[in-house]
Image (cartoon, rainbow, N blue to C red; front, side):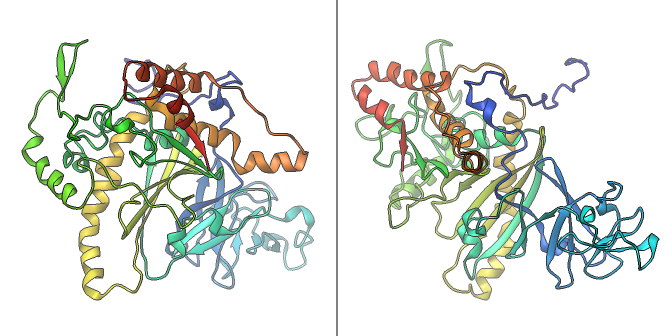
Length: 462
């Protein structure tokens, strides 16, 4: 009872800040609706029984229509509001309500009302139409359009590798007891690797703890109002090299005068990290740092980093693998994590490669999506989101994400178009001011950094 009725390690209730000048107050707890979202594997939807999934606070029922295509309706019978998912598909291609036998087709039309007989006037009645959600089945994964407006082309919202030939797709699902915003803000957190992830298998290979420590924030791109991306050390700034010496090395242990101690406290990780540092130098990759994702021919990549409506895109440094961590809101305090793991091939992989991929996948999946990612979950679930924050310069990515979510989501854009509203322009928020001033404080004490240039580079729009 150390936290009263709340379990000691239970997620605190999610609440938005009340201050309208705080961009966090403008982000909906159950996500943006005018987008496509991943739902479930097509193989999970059988012919004789509907499946239900709560998405964005809405219960959706899935079943196969007369063409064996998966359709989605609001899990609600318009007659007496019973769950359609509790019924069955007695007739192939239709779902039947368990209360009075109202039967619906894939478009939500009532085609039979079993308890009133064949001549029931409920059939075809305007008020007896169930709400339909458009669906698209791509590479065995069912995606759902959750909005009220006209759906956009699925390729606008679904990662491009899902439409490529020869790829091997391996979706993974898990549940996080926290809000989707917390998941996204933590996933692209630019400086928690040497704390939260210091004992993850992936980080134990790195002498620097994954990302070099630095008191300066990463330079951020807001790309075409669709995603936020940063490219560490890619010519935008030298923020990652803050502690580097003239030979390009960074100390493993650093002294912290406030506690009269060093971090990390021991050097046992160095027993093997030299092997991976040597390999990184051989391939031209800086020690302890992943290679930045490559841009497209125009120099812009809309699919790297954090993208609307709730994706975090990783693995861009690997030509053969792309991972999308898609946070799908379920409830205020519950998120379904859908990992779209794609192995990319320009031609059909041979038998040996397919076998090797299958044999090694369980370990690779555990290392990336569970051993590493669940350490993020152990941190993000305890955030008390409505409390005030005092941000560091290194929170630049988080601040840029909040701007993307609050100002550039399709829900807001479509509402403006319908109501002919002008975009709401917020002055610099307190969070943005703290990040900017953090850069200034660091730059003033370091001759290698130009204050004005840092100010200009903090957030770039493409």
